[in-house]
Length: 94
Figure 1 (cartoon, rainbow, N blue to C red):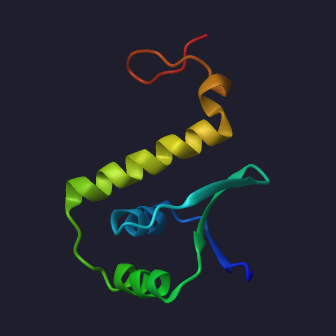
Figure 2 (tube, rainbow, N blue to C red):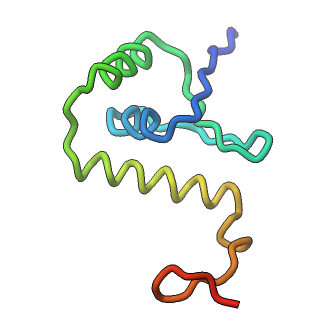
Figure 3 (cartoon, rainbow, N blue to C red):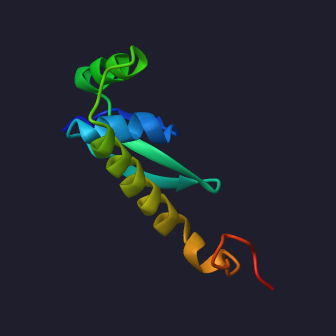
């Protein structure tokens, strides 16, 4: 059985665009950075070309995809537990 080639991306926005088009990434943590991993395919490269040519997307759907991936990134990195408490207006409290 042949293993599919994988494509690792660090761009949150391309990953969200791909997810918006029905191709969710697997997330991997490497050297403290989150990598969005996709099975390399002609469809992935076609969609990346659309992204780079400024393809129109539904705004709220794209924002939701970005927020979803960002949440998954933070969970993977475990940063919720590592941040100092933040006050009501986003200022760091002591």
